[in-house]
Amino acid sequence: MEQTLGPTWAERSPSARWLAWLGPVAFLALIVAQGVGFLVSPPDRDMGHLQKIMYVHVPSAWIAMVAFFLVFAASALYLWLRDERLDLLAAAAAEVGVVLTGLTLALGSIWGRPTWGVWWTWDPRLTSTAILFLIYSGYLALRNLTDEPERRERWSAVVGILAFLNVPIVYMSVRWWRTLHQVQSTPSTLDSGYVLGLRLNALAFLLVFVYLVGRRYQAARLERAVERRAEESSFTTGGVHV
Amino acid sequence: MYEWSFTIAAYALSWLTLLAYAFAVGARTRRARQLLRTPENAEAEP
Image (cartoon, rainbow over all chains, first blue to last red; front, side, top):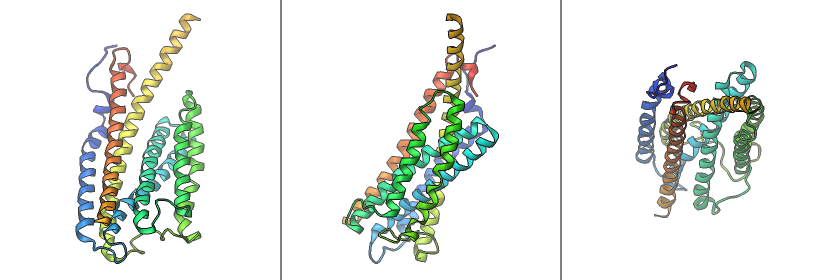
């Protein structure tokens, strides 16, 4: 067979082409959305300009939940269809979700210090979000525990489904245990002056999320191909020596 | 100024995190692609 050193599958595929333009569009959308948030929204009566942290903290938290829903859906579909691509999609979404949850916790901490007077407190929303971060970090760690792809895919799918149980707990924690963290920031609970900025920033974060998951999925498929090649070559080599 | 320092820190952290992650994923992709491009692996691409 003729060996090619030309463009790889990742460069030739239609998904690679739309990802190439989605990246700049997504980050440009983030600049525009944050610009609107800074210029249009008035300072809050109590928090002043600290309120603008909402435009990164809240979308980051929302999109992390979207990521974990994607892990849940792809994992459930994997158990049904046994398609390796669904496992790789779940893994890609989980990794981006962990990054966004870590960012949400860090941004909440930066916001909490000047408003609550503490960097961290064991509030139910903060604690359940930290647990969410640990659960999905565990999911990613689990994927490295076995080299046998099918077993890894099966275990990950089960954990990907079970881990999602914590997402509604995080979402509802501010209503079930009303403590320090305010209730969910949604267009219905916010002053109208902040709604446009929040919607635009959420949309921009969603675009960045789609871009990052697409890129991570692409990397995962290439890595899986390398792994498969290594398995085949070790099997052949083993056969020769035995 | 006190408010702005926390606000700017939050935005800077967001951008650093997202860009650093995007570059890290790009590096993983390039590395995997490089491994596949070695002549003995070229046919293994998905």
